[in-house]
Amino acid sequence: MDKKNSPVGLRVLAACFLAALFASLQSCEPGSRAEGAVGTNACPYSTAEEWNLFLRVAATQPDWGPTCEDSTCDADTYDRVKTGIQAVLESCRPYFATHPEIAACTDRLRHFVPAWMRQHDDNSYGFRRSNHEYLRSQAGADEPDGMMVPPEALVAAIPSRIKVIEAARRNGYRYLDHDSGIDETRTFVLVPDPLGRFDQWFLLNLQHGQNTVQVNQPLSILVVQKKDAAGNALPKVRLHFRDYTIASSGHGYRVALDETKNGKCYSCHTNGVRQLIPRITPVLEARPVHGEAGYDENGTGPVPADFALHRLQEFNRRLRSYGNPDWRGDIEPGDFGPPLGKNQGCTDCHDGVSRAALNMATSLRQLEKKVYYQLSMPPDNKLQRLLERNEMKNPELNAAEAARLEKALMSQANLIRDFEAARVPTLRSWLLGVTCR
Image (cartoon, rainbow, N blue to C red; front, top):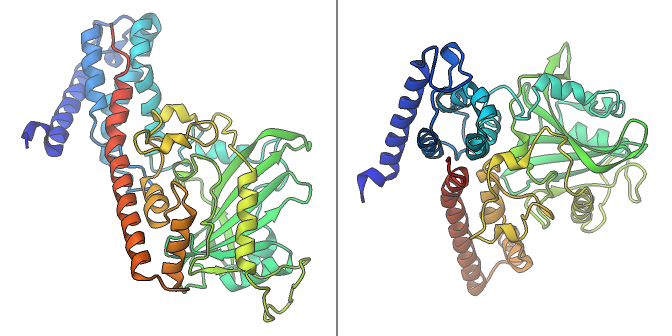
C-alpha cells in the first residue's frame, strides 16, 4: 500500500495541513491581504487558489465521521476544528460579504462546520439554541401548560421500575417493557394530554434484571406537540427532548433539570420519533391499565393472549402517525452534508421527503443496530420472522433456516460496512462541489 495514501498517512497529512492553517491564522498581522480584515482577526486568504487549498485541507479533516452517539466527544478534535477551520471562517466573514464568488464556494463548509461543532460539544443538546434557551422555549407563551412536566404519580414511584409500572397502570397510562434489541430493558410510558395538544413519552433505561433506577440516571422525555397553547393544530408536529436527572431528596427521590446535559438527540432522531422493533423480543411485557378491558388492580391476574405484542403494535401505529417533524430552526438537516447511502439503497426510502435523509449527524451505532442486529433496514418481514424465532427459540430454526439467517446477517454486515466507508468520501466530494474562482 502507498504509505502516503494509507489511512495513517492521510491522518498525518491532514494534521500537518491543519497545523499550517492554525499557524497562518495566528501569525496574521494588521493590514492583512484580505479586505475587511481587522487586527489579529484578519482573514488570512485572498485568492481563489488559497481558498481552494483551504477547502481541500478542511475536507480531508480526518475526524468528521464519528458522532457523540458513537464515541466519546473528543475535545482535542473539537478544538482543532474550532481553531484551525471555524476561526478562519469567522475571521473572513467581512471578506465573504464582498466576494460573492468565494462565499459561494465556501458556503457548504460554512454551514457544515458550525453544525458539526454543535453535535460535538460537551455541554448542549446540539441544537442551534443554547440548552438554556432551548429548554426555556419549551415553556414559552405559545406552548401548552405542563407540556414538559412529568406526572407526579410517576415521579413519586421512582426509583422502582415496578412501582413506576404500577403507577402507570393505576392512572391509565399505557406502558410497555421492551428491550428494543439493545440488550437492555426499556420501560416506555405514554401520557397523552387530555386536550389532545401533545403526547408525553417517558423512558426508563435499565440493564436486564435491574429494577431500581440509580441516582444520576436519566428519566428521558420526548414530547410530541400537536397543537399550540390555544388549541390550534400545528401543520407538523414539534418534538421536544429533555433529560431529567434522578436525584435523592430527603427520604425520597425527585427529578432535576440539568442544563449542561449533552445528549445529541438529533443523532438518533433524524427522522423524528422512532418506532420500536415490530416483533416479539426476549423482553416484551405489558398489562391492561385503568380504563381498559381486563384491568386488574393488583396486577396479578391473567393477561389477554399476545397483549404485549398488541400494545407494541398500537404504540408503533401512534408513532407512525406523527409524520416528519418541524424542527423550527433548531436543526437544519441540510447543514449536515449530503444524503448518505445512495449506493446501498438507503436514499430510496430516506429521500428527505417521505423519510429524512441519513447524514453525517446520523448515529452509526443506531444504524448498525437497525441494519445488522435487528435486520429491519431495509424491511424484510421474512428475515424478521427468522430472527424472532432464533431469539425466542419458538420454534427453533432448522439447519437450512439457520444458514439463511447467517447469510442475511453477513450481507447486512457488508451493507453497513460499505455505508460507513462511503460516508467521509461522500462528504468530502460535497464540500468540494463548488470550485473557487
